[in-house]
Amino acid sequence: MRQFVAGLLLGLAAMYWYAYQKDAFIQAAGNWFAEASADPNAKEKMDKMISRGH
Image (cartoon, rainbow, N blue to C red; front, side, top):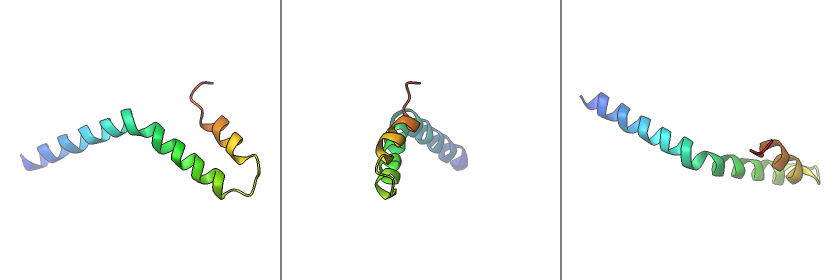
């Protein structure tokens, strides 16, 4: 029973993260890569690559 409850809570947490936090995480990771890059146009390239509106 404990394993079922633990799995259920882990599944709910994963669904919450995927629905509400995924975009913020991806944007933060893109910003980090753009800042770490030597390319002066890295920010625009990362924004274009991870934008949701294609």
